[in-house]
Amino acid sequence: MMKIGIVGADAFAWKNVQNWKSKVRNAILDILHGLPIEILNNEVGGNYEIAKLWTEGRESEIIVISGHCPVGKERWYCVDCNDFDDNFDKPGFVWDNLRHRFVKIYDAGGVDSLVEVEACALNLKTEILKPEVKQWEDYVTDGNGCEIRGTVRDNMKGQVFRRKGYKSRNFEIVDSIPPKPNGVLYDIEPVLAEGSELTEGIFSGLCLKYSSWHGKPSFDLETTVKHSEQDAKRLGETESQSGRPLRLEKNKEGTWLIYDWGWRVRIDSVISWRVVNRSGGTWTLEQIWKAKKEGLQVVIG
Image (cartoon, rainbow, N blue to C red; front, side, top):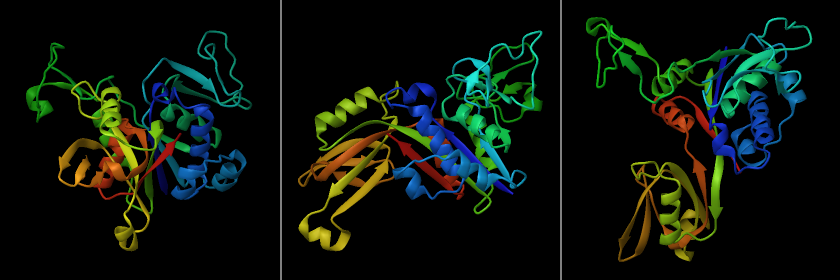
């Protein structure tokens, strides 16, 4: 049994990527017919017939996992017509399930919604792990329905009722993915911005535009640096780094970009950069890595 988790950004994060639905669908199809990550990151092709051929006869061996992102309005989608049909659950509607297959998704759910559509189109089993409330932490109430804040260690002893938020849902996805080679998680994210040289002013502008309300950068920054002649003999001409940027630091050697995992890059050596969106899917991917399971990211510009 192979479990393939596919998560990523909601529809609003993709607004600056042209034909994003087509590109994300193609990436999902490429994942489902087993293309390696190197191809996914550079040449997202997407071929329904190949994906169908690869999965045909293996429907009982593959389970697709996703998180049913609750952004937008939940509506019925006809997989065979490639369109929403708001009449599906109304009285008098006749469902011809021999010709039309329906799945209920959120119309701005982004990657999660498209995963459910493509899995249905390929007749694959799905394990859809839904949040129960639209917030990061769980929503906890007492017997009278009053919200309880803070840590509740024993639900029964405290006589509380807990509804699953995004964080618990994401942990549930992590727990559902078995170790390699029987499980893998993919996070599909858009490129938000890109450029060549990186200066203090450009970095400050990126932080202002793509930071969360508390001022912490809420994006990943991929940088390609060109090494000096002396370092190139040992490290190669160029090198790429990726992660969440924390801050800039100065010393007598220059100005350095500090990443959250401890690596640093001198900004005047950067020859290209791109900002990659961070979603709940990215957070889930990081938890997969912490659990020592297989996780990969697909970035689409």
